[in-house]
Image 1 (cartoon, rainbow, N blue to C red):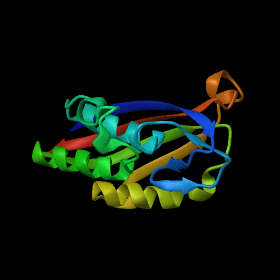
Image 2 (cartoon, rainbow, N blue to C red; image 1 turned 120 degrees about the horizontal axis):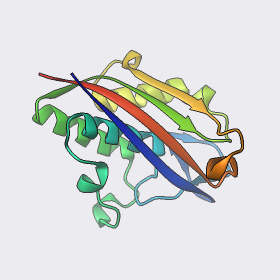
Image 3 (cartoon, rainbow, N blue to C red; image 1 turned 180 degrees about the horizontal axis):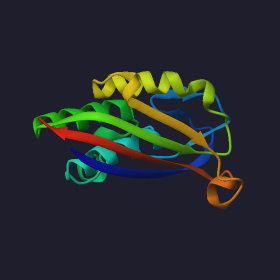
Length: 157
């Protein structure tokens, strides 16, 4: 078994869509990024790639590449999952934390888990998502952005 961790952060801006775990969340601001800026899914992808010692998402999906402009991060997660399988790895579970002052995310967590699990081909019971705040500290506390951390456990087949 191998473990990997991932981290991602994106800046908030008015007029952008807020997508977390593949779910569009109603909010007056969204995250800025080359893809859909899904900070949670990006952290999960990095944790999976790290567990398999396969680099990070920037290696496979570089910002600025036109084919990834606005793409759903769930599609990228499907590609990461396929890469892991090709290299002989299966996903055991992932656990994650989204850090944001607003909006409140608890009501969206189950849907996020289902979307992420489907993209990884695992049971939703193997996907943990927690939402927290930064107690008004730092860039997240000032509502300038959001961050996410993830840990993945994979096994060699």
